[in-house]
Image (cartoon, rainbow, N blue to C red; front, side, top):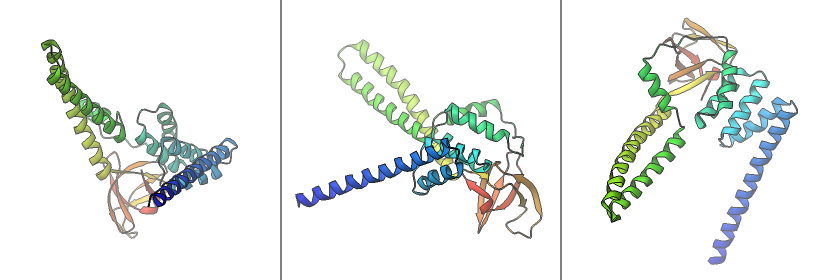
Length: 252
């Protein structure tokens, strides 16, 4: 029995090592192709990793760069946005995304927000979901440490500092949990997409025979609100609503 367990463990380790080597090799091939100006080959290698279920800041960032160099503006913005969700404060991603967005045809005026809501939105996006999760765990551990110091400390001064310090940490913990919950809910229920074709006429309803509502172009980011068969209901930042074939849009 012990021998069987050892064999299974060794087999799993070998399989994981082989898989990691394959990932590294595809990334290397993609990076080499990009350096040599073979952007289509770079996209092919990076996309193989995406199709295998891999996610990562470097992967999406490199893929966005390769698509941008290959002239696929919509796919470039799509992958920059995916990278930005994993690392919201990355300057390189923000810079390249801004350059790509500057080349889009459509300049949709966003409905104005009250400055308090703007501050709140900035706070929500300060960390990724993973980042807020780590912060919640860290604060919870600090609360336990503060509680332990309070109950086991011998001096009243130390107890007082640990008590008020624990209250401050508890407040930050509660706020972080609220923000994490909101971000998780948004990630599950609020879907964003990017137009990946050069231009498309949005329809008033989910049917090709419906009248056109408006025309939009590659790279525009929109909110996805509903799906009916192979049609997607979108909302622009200025509030306009229309329907597109799902092949014309990719979800972030």
